[in-house]
Length: 451
Length: 92
Image (cartoon, rainbow over all chains, first blue to last red; front, side, top):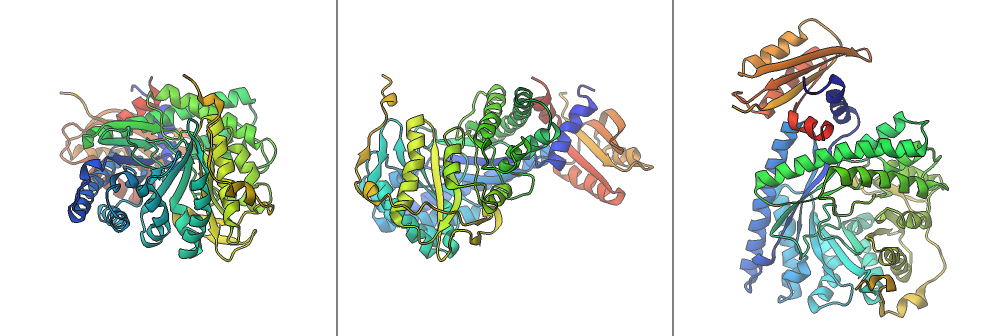
C-alpha cells in the first residue's frame, strides 16, 4: 500500500477525535452586474444570483463532505460592499437590498451572508453615510446579514468622524436587539482584507473577479491534540511540531477548496489559515496556549505563546499553499471560545491584554461583551485603540464589541448557538471623551510612505 | 482506465466477520479491493481497505450510509475517505 497504516490512521483520528474539519467555505459574489435603475429588477437580480450560486455551494460542498469524510462546518456567501451597488439609490432601496440578501440567504440555506458595508477610511460618500445610519435598522430586522465597515488603513490613516459615529451606532444596535446580539453581526476594521472568508467581516472586494471561492482551514482541535501530546519538548521543537500539523491541515483545505471551486466552475481564491475557535470543548485557541504551559490565558507569557503558535501555523501554512490570504492570523473570540471565557471569569484576562495580543498575531477584539452603560465615546475609543495597532503595524485588526443592555461587568450573557456565552468584561472607567470628539482623520504613519 | 481510490477504515473491538461483512458490502456494488491492512493499535482493531470505486454502481455518499449501518450493528466506527486527502496531507 502506498500509505502506511499509521499515516492513514493519523488523518482518520484527526477527523474522529480532534474536530478536524474545514471551518468555512465562503463564495465571494460580485453584485455590480446586478445594479439596475428599477429597484424591482435590481432586487430580483440580486436575489437570483445569490440563491442560484448559494444553493449550488451547499450541494457541491455536501458532495465533497461525503467524498473526503471531512465536515465542512460553514457554507457562506460574501458580496460586493452594498454601499457601492446602492450608490444611485435611496436609503429605502438600500434597506430593501439588505432584506433581499437576508431572504436569498435563507432560501439558499446559507446561515450568514457578508458584505453589507462600506470602505470609509478617508471619508464617506452619501451612500456610505446612509449605510452607516441604516445599521441599527438592518441588524435588528434581518437574521443572516452581516455588516462591516473599514474605517482605517495604513496608507490613509483613520477616519475618526466615522469612529465617533460608531460608538452611538453600536449602542443603538444593542438597544434594539435582545442582549445586544445585533452587534455580533457587525465588525469594524483597519486594513480589511478583500478575500476574508470569515464572518462577520467577509465581503467580496472590488479587486476580486466575478466569483472567488475562499476557504478557512480547520480549527484549533488538531493543533491542540499535538500540543497536548508534546508537553515536555522545548519551544523550538514545539514550533516544528505545530508547523508540520499546520502544513497537513492547510493541504487538506487547499485540496477541498480547489476541488469545490472547480466543481462550481468558479475561480479558487485563497486559503485562510487562521485558527478559528468554536464553542466546542477542545476547539479552543486559549486551551492550546494553556497546554503550552500558561496557567490561564491572559497570564504573563500569553502574548509570547500565542506569537509562537501562530508563527508556526503561518510557516506550515505558507509551505502548504501558495494562496494563503484572508486574515490568516488568529481569532481569540471571547464568547465563542470556552477557555477564553473561563479566563475572563477567573480574572486572568482583560481587554487590555486582548489588545496586546493583537499586536503580535490576533486579528482583533472579537466577541467581547461590555457593560450596557459604557459611554459611546469610550466604545469609540476602544475601537480607535485597536485599529491604531493595525494602522501602525500594517496589519488587519477588527473590533466586534457587544454592549449588553442592563448588564454590568461580571454579569453573564448567553448569545446562543455558535455565538456562545460570556461574562461581561470590565471597561476602564476613565474618559477619552475630549480626545475622541475632536474628530477629523488621523494621518497614516510615516512607514506607509513606501514609494 | 484510471482508478478512483478510497480508503475504508474500521476501528473498534475485534470480532468475527468484520472483513467479511465490509468486503461483501463493497463487492456487491462492483467495487474492487486493491489492498488491505489490519493491526491491533492501542488495544483496538484497526483495518484500512484501499478500494477502487471507478466501476461502482453507487455513490460514495450511498456507500457511506451502508457502511454506517454495518458499523452500528457491529459497534464499529467505519469511515470512507477519498485517497486524494491522504496524498495531500502525507505526500509532498
